[in-house]
Image 1 (cartoon, rainbow, N blue to C red):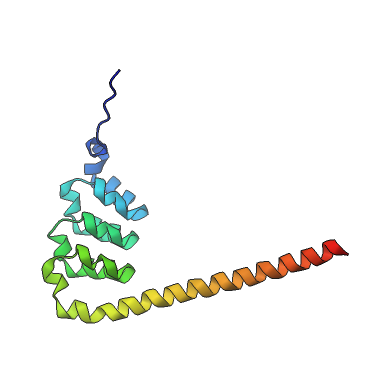
Image 2: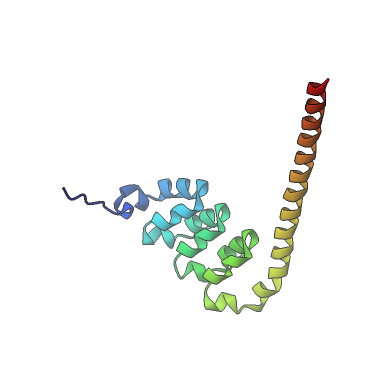
Length: 136
């Protein structure tokens, strides 16, 4: 018996703007399954990129050349520059802002790391106390 699996791109809701907008707000990478028309819709792509910078990969060429959308992606992940248009990759105004985006990423990383260390210290104190109580 031969089983045929149809590609997910045939699902009707992927061309429905309202449903797609709702989906990409929850998971930006759903943009990959949107119709070409919606991948060229600035509001849909902006919502997707705000959720997940990697959605820039699935935006239309026209929107990969849109400064607002690319800047939004770069705020989340500077490595998404590889999906921006060639013109944007050479744009001095955008390039000069990259260190600012990198610094913001570094600050987020350090904050998360500090919070994690504080949490582990609290857990280790609880563990030490409960171990000492068991020995008595």
